[in-house]
Length: 240
Image 1: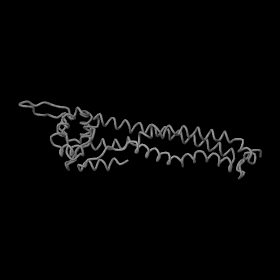
Image 2 (image 1 turned 30 degrees about the vertical axis):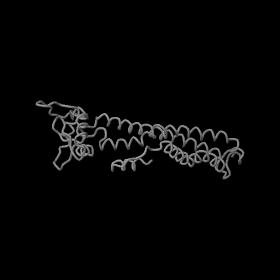
Image 3 (image 1 turned 135 degrees about the vertical axis):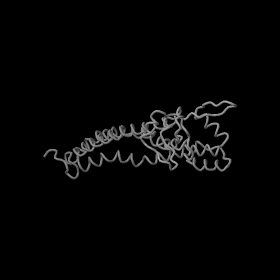
Image 4 (image 1 turned 45 degrees about the vertical axis):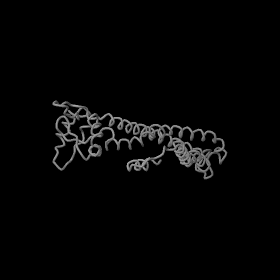
């Protein structure tokens, strides 16, 4: 709710008090309930208005269309949300490392690069050689980055932002695409949308279908009492 402002304040060295989590929860809850009023009214009132003005045949068509639309959207939302969620986890595991070239103006053969990336990718493709005493040994890229974060914060930020390359074991200059990188930040944004798609919005469409159907059944006798089920506008042909 004020995450970005607090993050910017910390970056400038300001000391902040502990946030009021309960207030944040109340703000988010009240806002979500307020935003749900209009969709709720739409779902409840639509079958009633259609039945009153257009008749029961129109209600049947409305329900068939709502079911078909909801099923398609629910499947799409669930799959899309799951894909975004898995993309973030895939990025956090470092599986994208080795795939993105660092472009410094030099020509890159995309086909050769792809062939090399298929052979050398993931965190294992970015092991770094570190000198320890008189010897040199390879260390995992996350350990190497952790040491850089402690000793050279500016360089660590450049690597994470994609302004400085990381050399792979086969000598290619790549962008680091693991956790805390710019690629990971993009995956987190996608997951922020993906989580509600697969956990709330998609499953909620099941309730939409049920609620419209139940309301139609409850008001069925009332609809039939209006011009024999043909509605105020006599749009049906029941009893014709």
